[in-house]
Length: 193
Image (cartoon, rainbow, N blue to C red; front, side, top):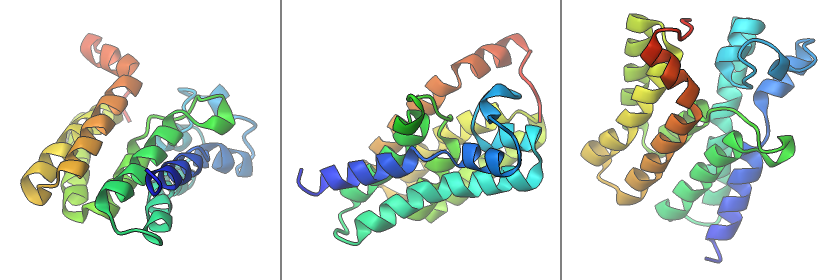
């Protein structure tokens, strides 16, 4: 538990930084939470501000997990602890301490974690997301199917129980954060990109 605690704190505090809010303020928007879907993630930034701001937000949200894992890697190479740092950054993104625990949906941060800890699985998940987005134009459906693909890919290609368990948790968190999107997908009212 001695090494787990700093990993959890590092991940959570870095994850709690809102790239979307920072990018929106630098772009001249007062508060992105008052525009579009009200979400601080890359999709809402893309729709409200534009492609460049959306891409910067996506990259920044991914890097939060990567940096948390890299910092943790300075004092341990234990995959269990590294995965905890990444998972904590996803939780921080979703429930940020700096913003009254109201954050984004965690998809980009989870993807950053996955690419760093399991690059092959990251590529597979990205391919599922892109294929789903291309065929349906639903970002939410791509995010949900991608998050479902992550633990399955880890199970088949990495066969690592710690990573598998971490991404099962990520899948349920992402589904929870997309609960309204799921309702709209089911009744045919979800927004397309």
